Each structure stands twice: as structure tokens, then as C-alpha cells.
Amino acid sequence: MMSYFSSEDIVLLENSVKETLEHGCKECKFKFIVFSTNVSLEPDGTKVFFLEVECPNCDAEYTDIMAMRNLND
Ligand SMILES: [Zn+2]
Image 1 (cartoon, rainbow, N blue to C red):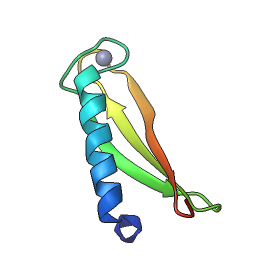
Image 2 (image 1 turned 90 degrees about the vertical axis):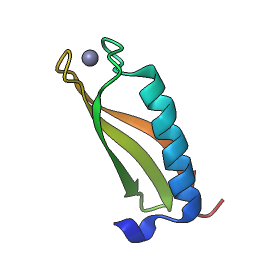
Image 3 (image 1 turned 45 degrees about the vertical axis):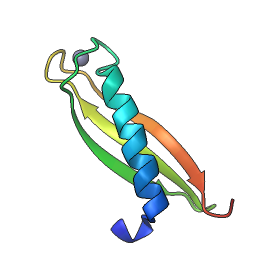
């Protein structure tokens, strides 16, 4: 899985995470959400970066798509 990441991807991911965390939980705006980042590679070469979020305040669980990038671009 990690071999999919280029340094550009890491930067994109870090920026997206930062942005998402500034907004907090999308249900209650709680700032200290628990999250893990994930990336999936679609058959057409698109990398989809997403964040799996758990909110300890309101118990919301959701997946947020942060960014997409096509390897062939
Ligand atoms: Zn919440």
C-alpha cells in the first residue's frame, strides 16, 4: 500500500488532512476527532485519498474523500 505514495501524494495528503481537521467533525464540529488516512488505487489509475473519521464527542463515523489524483495526468 505505501508504495503507491509519491512525495507529491504525501504533501497532498498532509494538506488535505490539515484542512479537514480545521473543520472538525462534520456533525458537531468537535475538533479532536480520531482519524486514519487511506488511499485506494482505482483500475483507471486514479488515486483516491480518504479519511476515516470517528468522533469521540457525538460518535459519528464517516469517510471523507479528501482528494483524487490521476496517475496519468
Ligand atoms: Zn461529532
